[in-house]
Image 1: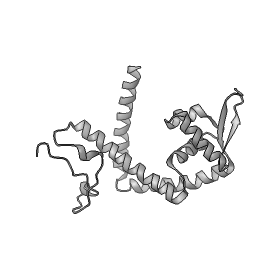
Image 2 (image 1 turned 90 degrees about the vertical axis):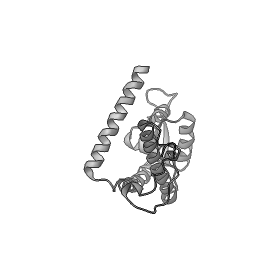
Image 3 (image 1 turned 180 degrees about the horizontal axis):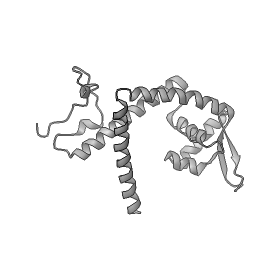
Length: 181
């Protein structure tokens, strides 16, 4: 089977289901000769993309909101005192321009408000409005259910093990990145 493409990433195939339609994702480019770490990386990335696409579609269909708007509101919900635009950009890992555009839209819908920063009048903080807080609370409750559904195929101990393993990966990558700086 040398150089054959690994196509065992069919929906349900890993769980033993036969006849499942193939999922063409990042893993379809792998061969048996690829390093295990590369296979693992592409499996993790494929799972992330599949889950993210599902969440994006559901947010759009059920609430008419994009994932970046949901993410910005989630950051603000955790910080009722508000966050500066630069801090939002860092936390969301996007450019300042993206945050400005999303904030402009949410402000037009009266879901967020910009307020002058008490420490620096040249800067603004963004806060959820009461309407924004209510809207986010509704979305967040449904979103949590979607995520629980995604992971419902795993037992509690499996989720804990996966969480612990991914924590190790995250810490290792973070430590390596810090050492490079």
